Length: 132
Image 1 (cartoon, helix red, strand yellow):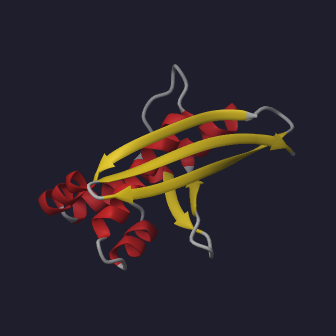
Image 2 (cartoon, one colour):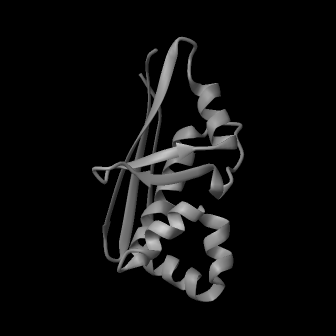
Image 3 (spheres, helix red, strand yellow):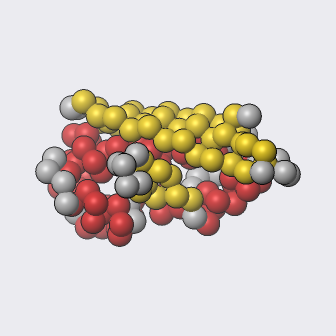
C-alpha cells in the first residue's frame, strides 16, 4: 500500500548561488557530512547537491500530514547503494513520522528517484508499506 508520494524540482543555479553566497554554513545546515563528501567528489557538484535538496523536499512531502510541521534538513540523508541507486535514510523527526504513518504489521520502504538536466534537478519519492 502507498503511504505517501512526494516530488520536487530544484533550479540547480539556485543551489549554486546559495553555495556562493553562504558557503559552508549553507552546506552544513542543509546536507549531512556524507552528502557533502559525495557531492564534493563529483564534477558539477551543484547538480548533485540540487538532486539531494529536491530529494529531501520530496521525502518531506511524502511524509507530511495535515498537521505535520517542517523537518530538519538533517533528518533525511540521501545515500547511494553499491549500484548507484539513491536511497533515503531517515533520522529523528523523519523516522518518527514514518513510524506514525506505518500501520501495525507492516514495514515501510522509501523509494527514491533522482534526475537532472541543467538547469533543473528533480526527485520523486514513494513510501510503500509491505506486510512485515
